[in-house]
Image 1: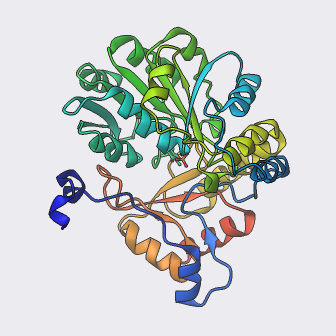
Image 2: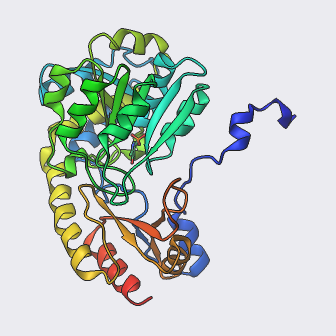
Amino acid sequence: MERLVRSCYKQKSGYAFAKKAEDIAREYGIDRVARLASNENPEPLSPLALKAAEEALRTVNRYPDERVNVLMNALRQHYGDYHFVTGVGMDGVIETLFRTLVEPGEKVAVSTPTFSFYALAAMGQGAEVVTVPREPDFSVDPKKLIRAAKESKVTVLCSPNNPTGNATGTDVVREILEAIEGVLFLDNAYVEFSGIDYLPLMKKHENLVLGRTFSKVYSLAGLRIGYAFSPRWLQPWYNRAGTPFTVNSVSMAAAAAALSDTGHADRYIVQVKRWRKKFAKDVRFPVLPSDANFVMIDVAPRSGDEVVGELARKGVIVRSCRSFAGLEDHYIRVSVGEDWENERFVQEINAL
Ligand SMILES: *Cc1c(COP(=O)(O)O)cnc(C)c1O
């Protein structure tokens, strides 16, 4: 029966998931595994978010509010008078955005190496994915991206970029926005760790969509909730294309409450800034400069997979960058976790 499955899914590999901590613990008989592969905030969710989620659980016999009002109001209170769209993680937002805008056969330009889901989601929409390689230092040449973007319905740029960690400045993003016809989707999953403010661009450019997530700094990865700053024209069409009731009532309540607990987010941001510096100083391999809550490390002449395997045996889970198309196979990506996890990582990688 497999002949019935669409060929696009058979040609390409799927999303690469991190190895499970429980599996590694069992395999190697380790009781405490350092989980540094998925860029999550190691601190549990804010108590305010927990309370709101518990409260919302009481009414899950009813369908959620399709307008997602509790979260929309919280976002406006937090950021000001913008338009937002929401989804099942930012991944859900990306999927719905493509569904709203991209006809089969149209082009989606993606600045690479980067997060793999853009290409998977675009492909699912029947789009032709055009990859635009970054420069050797992983910066973005706006001229190159603009050339591909001019022929594309949507262009995707991740900043700070996963997995390289570097951010693209607002001047470069502005240059791109001013030159292109289609939409620029700027993935801001890690923007809280960068100190860069892209919001002023939102006011001036009606072709900018700024993707955000509650999975990283807000400790809500398991609740699958994301959103985007959207131009006003896009919002009703996005809602029409989207799956009905896609954001559940527990997630929207938790996310709204999480926004108000700035102390929770700030604690992790401080931790991230401290450990980015420590990694750069203490790890004996080259650590690339990062604006995110992870660092990419060049482990040449070893391969990413080899180092990830060796660290796993020591109970430290990090991410091999082999699956990021367009990147040579000698990099690993390491999230900033709790102190003991980061310390274990430094100790084990230096002992390789
Ligand atoms: C983690 C991540 C996301 C989205 O995560 P969701 O959990 O789907 O909100 C989006 N983009 C990048 C680059 C990421 O690393």
